Amino acid sequence: MPHLALYTFGVLKSPLADPAPLTREFYDIGEAVYRTFSQHPGHLGHAEAADGDRGVLFEADWGAWGEFAVPTWYGKGRTAETTALAATLSLWTGLRPAFDAVYTGLHREALNRRYDWFERTEHPNHVFWWVSDGVIPTWRNGVSRLEHLHGHGSTPHAFTFHDSFAPDGTPTRTKAIGPKSGQAR
Image (cartoon, rainbow, N blue to C red; front, side, top):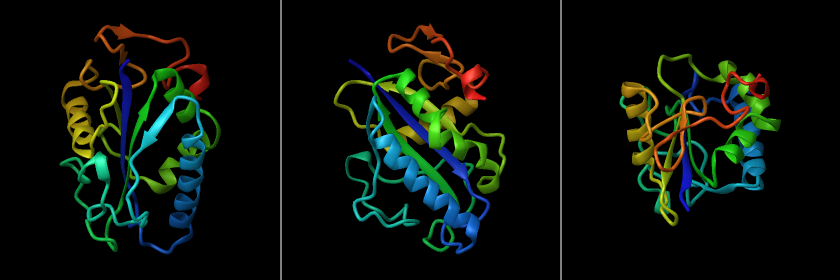
């Protein structure tokens, strides 16, 4: 049975190494969100650096998730002192569990604060795609899919919650999925 890959990407207002309170808040809530996600039904795994060092993204060993990569539109730093981005790569059993994890609880609270931490851009901040059972998506896959979504809109190749597709490529609409549903407010 196919699994759902999710890549998220955002450009932060300040570098990850910034000692300011907002950066610390972002780290603290991010760690709590990852703990919650890892226990969420339907979560199969997410990319974690082997050494667990915060802020060292480009040089980290990501194992089967591949070499860290970012979209072409990211123009800030790439060192531990200058990196100003947040990216995640995860694997889910389907749209419903991913939706429930993203739009409820602690992550929903974090979404409500996103503009405290992230720059507003014209680029998409997340993308989904289906992978075969046993396949681990890579950072490069995520970047490629996000850039495809930006250039072509939602397609079976790269899509969002609101305009989603089933594993066979047919459009799908699960009740209460998408940012315009009552649950997502």
